[in-house]
Image (cartoon, rainbow over all chains, first blue to last red; front, side, top):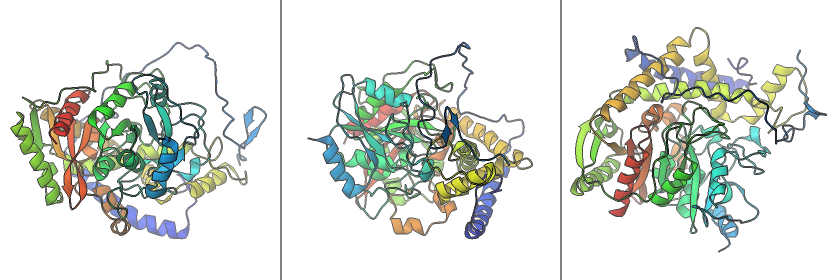
Length: 82
Length: 437
């Protein structure tokens, strides 16, 4: 799970979280007592609508590279893919 | 008074700040003369905004969040960034690598979380001040209750989230805190309304929130019996009952109502919040902003190393849990199930509001705990503290916490909850309570 979440965990963290997560997941089972047959899921608490704007380019006033040290020219510099 | 110097002095004692402005400058408008503090997770132009997390250390947003922009436009001076639990993950503002604020009533106790810094400065500021805060599952109401200030959490979508370093998209709400109901309402009025940058910001017109009359004549108050159950401190309950009695004397009617899915709302809330958080936090990878490490190893190795170093304990726990509940094979049993239970929770509230105008309950089941008590708690016990605030947050209804007396010298919060977009009703009841004191 930690691998999938991109987290390097120590042995101590792995052991501690495993114990704590068991307790928490066990507590989450109380949802089983709710009858949700034919109930729709609420992805938001209120109804939301898509809002679309015209597909026109607008001026970009920020410098997207202003907060990184990993840059080269006008590009971000990232780690190797493999 | 030099507000910056005064804040610096107060901060030495109470530790509510992550960043302080360099120069004091006010404009003109509805908020002229007010210093407004901003919770660390709300982007503020050229002022470090790190949501209480080491992984965003050094991040200076090149833009203002919509709420900050609107606040500045009405003449307020942006005073600084207030401390919080990392990304809002906490009830006591102890899950942070930075300042843990100290309760103004007892420095051995928590201010509550996650907007602990916002509540703390609101309580101690002796100059005109209002706070911008944020709630996902109770992060405005809880600290407002523990610090004895007013906290307003609006309807989900009433206030734009553009520029908020998000925790859980379907739950996050930017709100306000102040010493008085009217001051909090004034800032809420300024920041509310639709926004082209946030498609979930509602288009409905903004109501009048400030300057409402202080009356509860004819107001129908619902008392949700589940919120007065075992586990809620008896003295806290008594303080709230005294307030209810006074409302009745002032012309309101009281009736018991039921919110039958209250007990399961805690699990539904945590599953949804953690699932959304785990996807939101995927973008934090030490590449574009915040914590950077030397680019060693491949993509996965680099990101995993940065995230392990930059995230605190509670964040890692929630990311793993959130990742788990979204995984193929578990998604239906946890995430989807929780979303369906949320529908039931919303139905509970809607049904209650057919017969009453507002619901009133204690904000928190206890007064502010001591730090040594908090350190003894297991994660699940931390989560259980949110039992009274998660259901209204899951349902996205507006709520106001107002101070309602003290128990052993510590403030108690009175929670007033109204239906979607009916902020004015809850605010008016809060104002009537304030005026009666």
